[in-house]
Image (cartoon, rainbow, N blue to C red; front, side, top):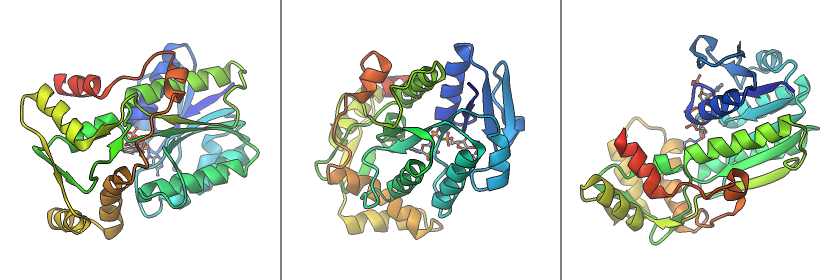
Length: 285
Ligand SMILES: NC(=O)c1ccc[n+]([C@@H]2O[C@H](COP(=O)([O-])OP(=O)(O)OC[C@H]3O[C@@H](n4cnc5c(N)ncnc54)[C@H](OP(=O)(O)O)[C@@H]3O)[C@@H](O)[C@H]2O)c1
């Protein structure tokens, strides 16, 4: 089977490609700039962009299994995803593994998740088999957000079952390797990938304080304060982006990202990394 991995210059796609390549699998790597392709053996970089139907179809020629990383956030993201799904279907891809987001729904509070629901619906309407990997917020991103002495947002007592990117990538590689071996257990399955703990921002701040030795604390902003503080600090940032940032906190406040799922340990064959492990690794760099 021919396997294509998108986003292989990025964090998740890069780790997925390395895991599979280490297992001896050759890969097709669709990239906006093939000159930046990671240094892997027996891999073929092909030029593409999510939003370019013809170029994407050429890049996916002969591909059986496709891992699709969602694109960077932008006002055109939804259309780019739809174009790429169309390209994959028309190119004859058999199975699409799509990196979605926890609780993807058209009315999700976290505004950026809504495009994942649209992409999932589009994939379901094709003839491709699919596996949706709905990951929660990345622990690595939470550790970065919290990398200020004061974490400010409106999550009240909300909790987040954040997940390590390393675990998401390993789980994705395991799923793709199974599919490539002809195993059909992941056909039309949706997995929710979370860590094994659900943490409040107060607890996240406490972990940061313990590991960095510097005091971190959580400041509970009102919604108005959250918008005002971000608009003041990032005055050139468009409203949709500010709304997306604030909605990460309000989604957590509403409990939409609190649920811990058993799917990740099943896919990994071990417990997920906990938040402390991720922060320690981040600060050891
Ligand atoms: N769960 C979370 O907490 C969370 C947080 C942040 C982001 N995300 C989402 O998860 C995805 C994967 O995370 P990551 O850390 O691996 O991201 P990343 O390191 O930024 O990698 C994203 C990859 O997607 C490629 N890409 C972006 N837009 C594209 C386009 N229009 N056409 C073709 N390729 C495009 C990039 O290619 P280039 O190298 O050519 O730019 C890059 O290789 C992100 O793209 C984002 O949608 C999730």
